[in-house]
Length: 386
Image 1 (cartoon, rainbow, N blue to C red):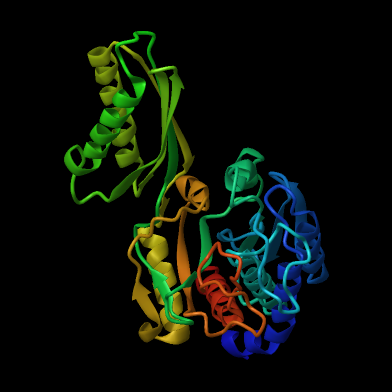
Image 2: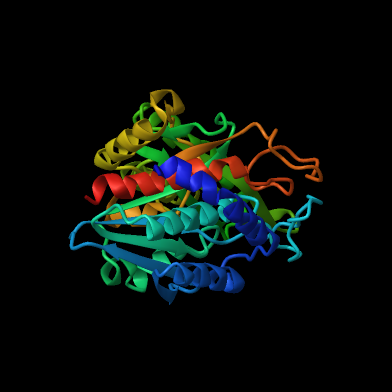
C-alpha cells in the first residue's frame, strides 16, 4: 500500500487526535498535557522518546537499517493566549488558551507521519521527530538548541510545515530562500534637562528620519518594514523632558537587520548632538528570518511532485509574519513549506464570527491539511533515507 492510501486509512484517528489537542490548548511554557499526549502516542508505536527538552519539548527517534543519514521533522506545540469564540465540540476548554495558529494540526500531522513510518519502515537511517514548545513567545526553538537537541539527536536536515489560510486548500507553497521574516523590536528613550529642548519635538523629528532608512539607506530590492508603533511623552508643566518611541522591524536577511540597527543608532547619535539631549536605542532581535536552503527546497519539490504532481505546487513569496523554526535553519540545512488551508469554507458549524485568518478567536485548522502534510513528511523520509 503506498503512502497516500495508507495515510488516508489512518486519517480518522488523527482528526480525532487533532480535535483533542485543540480542545486542550496550552500556551507557551505550559504544554504539560500536550507533551504527555505526544510522548504516549510515540511510545505506543515503538518510537524512542525523550522528554523535557528545552522545557516541555519532546523528541522521538525512529531508526531502521544501518544507514547513517538522518532527517528531522518538526512541529510546534503551543497555543495562543486568546479566548476562543468557536462553539463547536472541540473548542478549547482552557479559558484564555486557544490553538488559533494551527499548531494542533501541525502536531497531529507529524504524529500521523510518525505512525505511518513506524509501521512501514521503508527507509534506511534515522528520523528525528521534534515537537517544539513555546513557538509563539520566548523562543522555544532556541531553548531546545541550548538544551543540546542538535547534538543529542543529530540530523542532516530539518523540515517543517505551516498551514496557511488564503492559499488554495491542499496546495503546497514553497521557495528556495527566505520565506518568513525576522521579528525585531526597538525602544528609543529621549531625555533632556534643558527647558528649551522639547523631547517630544525631538521624537517626532527622529521618527521621520528613521523611516528614511527604509526608503533611502538600504537597497530597494531588499524588503524591510520599520513601524513606529507608539510615541509617548512625559510632560512636566509646560516642558516635555522625556519621550519614548517603540516599534518593530521586519526583514528577510540578517544583513538588512544589521544595516537598520546600525543606521538607527547613527541617526540617534546625530540627533543627540543636534538637540543636546540624551538618546538611548535598545534594539532586540526576537526571531531570525526563516531562510530555506536551495538543496532542501529541491528535496521538497521532488517529493511533492512525486506525490501530487506539479499542479499542486506554487512558488511562495516571502511573508512578513515570523517563525522561530528559523533558529534550526541557522544551524542546519532545511526548509519550511506552507500547506494551503483554503478560504475558511471547511469550518464546522459553531465557528465564531471572525475571518479565516491566523491568530483570531474564530480560527480552526483545516483537517484536510493533515494527510498531505503527513504524506510529504513520510515520503521525504522514504525518498532520501535509502
